[in-house]
Length: 472
Ligand SMILES: CC(C)(COP(=O)(O)OP(=O)(O)OC[C@H]1O[C@@H](n2cnc3c(N)ncnc32)[C@H](O)[C@@H]1OP(=O)(O)O)[C@@H](O)C(=O)NCCC(=O)NCCS
Image (cartoon, rainbow, N blue to C red; front, side, top):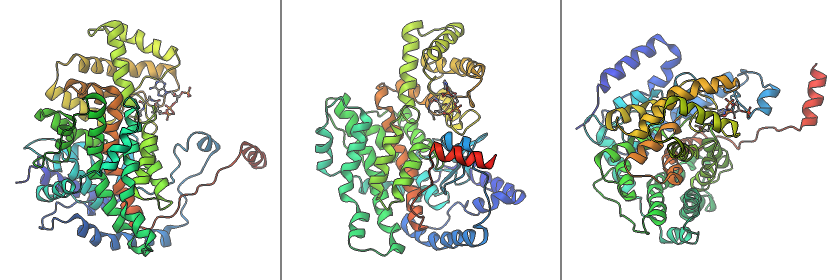
């Protein structure tokens, strides 16, 4: 049984839009609901790789010298904003519209990706299939991938021992990243490389590592949670559950709505094109032929920064500080005062702004829709809704903030809090589990396409001064 909500008609609409917009043709060539019975992701990928290798070769040979823009001093000094410098196949971010996974927006993914229950949220395994193959999987293919991930989910004992060597109150991201590093000893890529594998075959052990890593990160993450907050009472995986559902279950949350939230959460946090700190870090480290475990652990360390993944923790803590100071039924006037107080003390308002987006993040919008459907009367959700009205005009008034609108992190905390996952310090670990799907999918393609070592040029201030003098 396949639970599509108008999926086929949506796909035909997308296809006809592609006919009218030549630039979309290439991505939509990939958009086909799978109708054949092949349930094996590996062999699907094997079939696709030669075609994509040829495509890359053609772009290089025919367009290698085409300019993609000018690099300005502002870009060099401004964190490389607006500088196109990376190939990232799995998703593309439009500043006005938000993310598209292999050409599909979040609402489109919610319509066409298989769900665990009729009309439900997309399953992260379906998104993994889409990111890797560019094709929307059937429910049978997703179920087969769920099964494969469960079969790869056994975490070696030494990983738990390594985590246990840390103080129990070490930040959950430190414990999680340490666990991922400990998983690395099982890397098939490293073993194959030591045995002298031919470079045309690199993608195969990378695929094996990536799938095992994706399968095991929820187990490691759940262990960290239970160790820290639930007296080390670990909950084993349930073989009847899918990836997102199992993750919620292992954390200790079994309500059907929380399982749905986790499926949605893991799906929407997985990938956000290649330039964000975690994705770019993973890609950079992997470019040295570091295996998926090493690369993803590095990505997690970037995700742990407050300007990136840690913002979801900061948002809930900040919202709770509002409630502490002003009460749950805080007026908009009092909220404005609190926002100004935060800004005047030299802090950012967490959950607002973005390095690339210039509109409300669609990941925020779909979480808001989830809240409107499942928890419209939650007092913290009402507060988040009021912030949506109060914060943007204030940030605009500052005159320097490029995007005053809420991002993905502005919403996730109150949803999790509603279902009992109240430990804000843990939230970035959930983001990290999801990111494994996006970063590893691209990493497999990095190897399949033979992408090179990343090595941009850097300069000194003196070099810039001299160069600019000459250019004047
Ligand atoms: C995400 C973020 C790091 C993007 O940074 P950026 O690309 O440099 O953003 P901008 O170009 O708009 O920044 C220009 C200025 O506005 C400030 N600004 C941006 N967002 C802000 C916010 N939410 N609150 C207060 N000030 C903000 C920046 O700190 C910067 O100030 P400065 O020139 O004094 O250093 C930034 O918006 C931010 O810190 N947001 C809050 C943290 C957050 O939610 N992160 C999660 C992102 S998904």
